[in-house]
Amino acid sequence: EFNTPLTGDAEKDTAYVNGGVLKEGVYKFTEDSKIAVTGENARTISLEKGATIDASGKTLTLDIAESTKSAHGLYHDAAEAVNVKADTLSINIKSTNNGNDGAQGIRNLQGDVVLDANVNIDVNGTSNTIGIYSNTGTIAVNGNLDVKAEGNNGGYAQYGASGIYATSKMSDSKGTVVNVAGNYTFEGNANGIYANSGGSVVNVSGGSIKVAAGQSNGYAALIAEDATINM
Image (cartoon, rainbow, N blue to C red):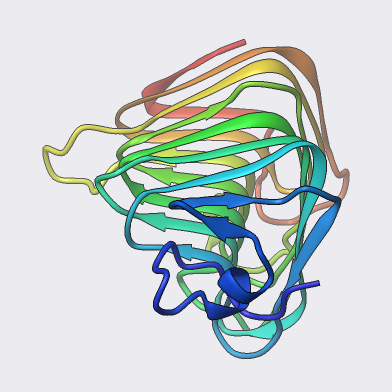
């Protein structure tokens, strides 16, 4: 188990160098592995440059058992792409008193995120609780995607929580594209898919969406505003 964020910077990632994971520029996990981080503004993978993470045939778990303010499983803010290969990428997030950056399984602010894996996300937060958040750039899930989201009726109305949230930087900026090659299965107290602004597009091949009954934020299975959802 690793207890420090994976950053894509060898000088910072001494735990991964010493653990034999980072070799010749590739993070290679040869057995089922976990990255577990707690605390304020916790991130398990925090990338400001591109990276290749190879856990082929294995399960890579990203775990934030408790965080205050923001909490992100895979955070990507780089022009260079990140590629994750695994049998299963499992992301578990729990955050209290989180602000605008929220509790989010995957947060992409630019560039491309390519996930060659089945992806399971379980996220619990109090504001902006989102399984996959993409703001410009692209996210490709080349497998099945399973999201459970508990927004606790926090945040601002229907913006408070979503399984997938695709958006832009507003103004005249171009929106993001999120592609799920396999089935998308969602259950929770949140929107199933919210595509919002900039011509953002979410493509999913099939699956099911179950939004909790009795929630007070106006969540829906699908919401598209100046955007497109293909299912």
